[in-house]
Image (cartoon, rainbow, N blue to C red; front, side, top):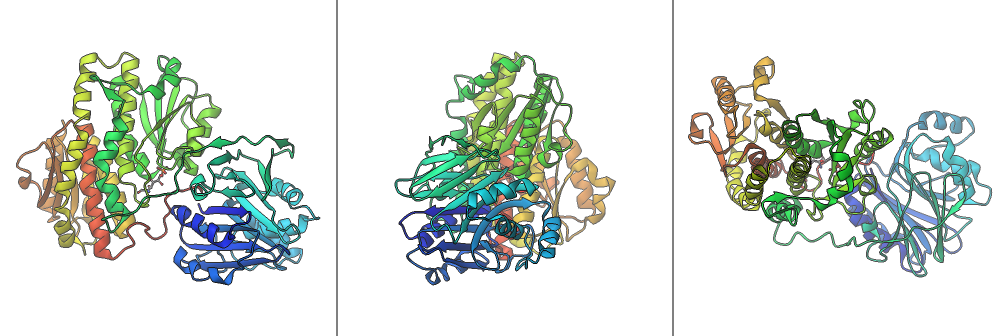
Length: 607
Ligand code: AGP
């Protein structure tokens, strides 16, 4: 992952870059660093392990009269989170400073070669080979040196580099990792995300794979992979740097959970109207719809969980194979793909490397691609035939909450609209769906209120050995998501098991110290699920149930959170809200870092 920001111009570089890093912390927070270049070329570097606050204390050590600088916030891939492994990296003479997002897959062989040639390494990162390669290739022109080095690399990269002999110049390059340049007036920028420079310019060029950008304060040039200059494709972006404040809340996660009635309403605005579902953005693929023979959802993590109920609905309505795949598997072992396979990619960030890889595999096979994305202007929005935005607003907390419910809802809306367009959804069925969909914001509000009960439940069960989340049908995706939330936030072991599978092995874990968390929906498998919960209780496992549309939950659960009755697809989505709160409360019990759990990053741009 990692976030990069660079600046050439008259403003105080260290402070401007540090402010940019604050907006990029979602990309990783294992360490951070800044390098600045003075007019005489000398390069100064400060870098610290840990969160940005550690680096902030070192900023006064950097010169105030720098004319350019680059900065980095790291999510560790190769090498532990330490000062030495923090970026920027430099060569032995201190003449080069380089920041990198991505992975150099052939770094071991390159490092062996460089060490044999006499280079000494000061970190255990893959990135450091880049510095030594550039040092070897440098003959007075940084861009030429970088062009000489790039063909030797395997992997993914977004880099920004400075050299002491060319003060004020930054050369940047990308392959399969996001990078933009920002065009200013007498100042130029480079960043992983326009948000890092939005306070200074909205005039952005999104680099394409293989491209190299060359910046000084007075201008920017762009070069294709073959070295030929290409025109700057300047776009005006609306990204705002104000990633909002926590307001009355202690954590962004709390705020983002509370925002769900609004974010869910926003996802439907103009799309669920007049007794039907119609998403204008899908007009872009209307010519493909009649010919679709299979539907493949691809996503990672929570976004994958958000796709499951929609895939099941698609299969039922269309009567054709429809399924969800984890993007990291799909991209290297895809199913049979072609122009009649509709691929629907889901991603909050729109930058998840595996999801982008899966979309590339789909496009290479000429499959039409719909992207469901929250982050406007992200790479995924520029890689699909049709883009449906979540409109959930910025999500700061690493744990997906409002983006998850908006993804699950938007995926359902897309399936319903496609089915309607293909003649698989009658007007009266569409009207029935629309009526219930429009009640979702209200249901989310009441689920938020009911979630208050999770505080006492978490206090009661914190200290358990582990948690088994379970359900059947549509509720199972919610169980998976509940387990994921609990794991990532409270560092407790949890897994999602289909209720009917418990007896095939996992039941041996159960007992008084291993609660079962059940999503109980009023569906055709309700009685089967209840029997499975009774089996768990017979093994003395306490059952915590989030229940929709079922009376007498006390007969199969020790603790219950009641949410509104709705059809299973909708109830499943609403049921995730109390489970988010459960994980949040458990994280508080554990004293964990709620918005920035250890080892994670919001945007996962490595494989
Ligand atoms: C869950 O809370 C996570 N943040 C994670 O699983 C996330 O959903 C996954 O990394 C995919 O991210 P994306 O939606 O940005 O593609």
